[in-house]
Amino acid sequence: MTLGADSCSLILVMARLKSSEKRDAILQAAVGEIAEAGLGAATAKIARRADVAAGTLFTYFVNKDELLNELYLELKGEVYSRVNESFPHKGSLERRVKHIWVSYLGWAVEYPLKRKVSVQLNVSDVITAATRSRAAEARGLIDRTLRELGERESLRELPSGFAVAMMSSLQDAVMEFIAKKPKQQEMLTERAFEVFWRAVR
Image 1 (tube, helix red, strand yellow):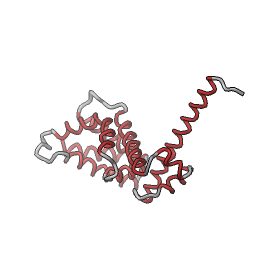
Image 2 (cartoon, rainbow, N blue to C red):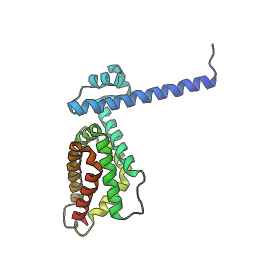
Image 3 (cartoon, rainbow, N blue to C red):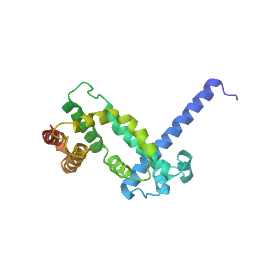
Image 4 (cartoon, one colour):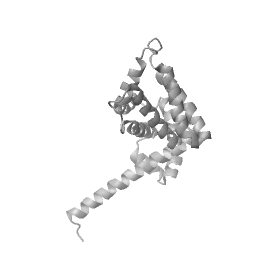
């Protein structure tokens, strides 16, 4: 039986979808393995968790370094998409910073394993400068807002990036307490931001 053009197109589309699903499964499996074993997680275990043959993993990623770089892009893309969604472009600086605060904490609390892996990838030498540059393309709104924050009079004499480091440390503390008392997530998120904003305004 000869397949028509429409049938062939459908098969090609289904093949691409299947390939996309396998790639996503490998990336999700990598999150699970790295969260448990660190960046030294074996590719064989990642493949097993993704329910694909070990050789199949290397059909999608040339080597483990490429897998980690793609995972870095995937996780950063998720965070930045969350922040960029409904970003209050015309809002006050306080409103924009709070949007970043709430959006990031929401993602981190919802996906603790992804956050754990993202933190490890952030400081890994395996992540190339080119990969970091690609990821940064999506964080323009964040960078501009935090740069404006750092230019406030209360922060001008402090080292560059001080406000961001303080924000990150306080967010870590918030996540630690939310993990202990998840029902207080909204209150902790709001009150901690108030503490942060009083310190930088």
